Length: 71
Image (tube, rainbow, N blue to C red; front, side):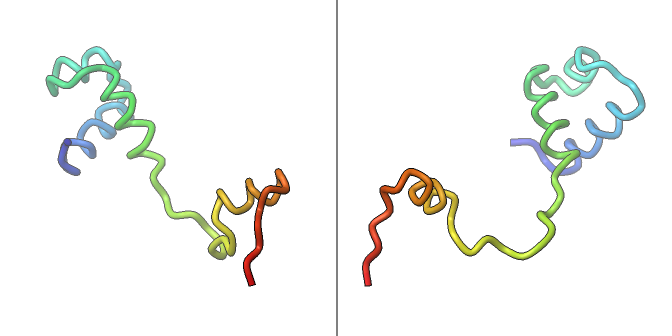
């Protein structure tokens, strides 16, 4: 697990144009982890709008007509 400070520095360096390979060497983190940090940390924003009334698995069950209602 990497700290928020490390993630912020990685995203900042990437925005300046530093390639994944150089970031990997600089922070001694695997390249795949660098890509994951950048894709998830840079785009982590809260969902806008009202909360869902049904859970995703409930919606999936309704679509497949296997939802059993219990009253």
